[in-house]
Length: 95
Image 1 (cartoon, rainbow, N blue to C red):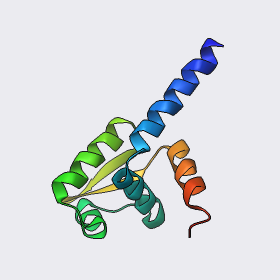
Image 2 (cartoon, rainbow, N blue to C red):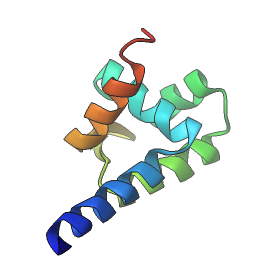
Image 3 (cartoon, one colour):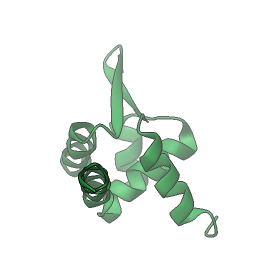
Image 4 (tube, helix red, strand yellow):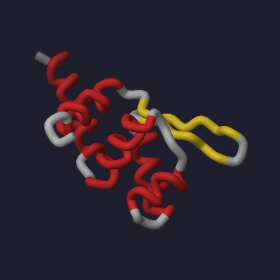
């Protein structure tokens, strides 16, 4: 029972991080595009760059995304397969 509870706690934390429209949109966009940088996300989301950066930090801290520096830019991509499956499930009938 304890092992199952621990696993459910982890899933709950993942869902908490994803439970914001901007973060959902970021993860969905990264999955659809195979990764992108902050400037591209900011243009697509039509929110200030600082807002995008704050949401990216939460996603990075949760281990959902990872950034890779290419010159002056950082390209982000989804690295958590559970998050990818959740987003695909939530949006599969909408596309």
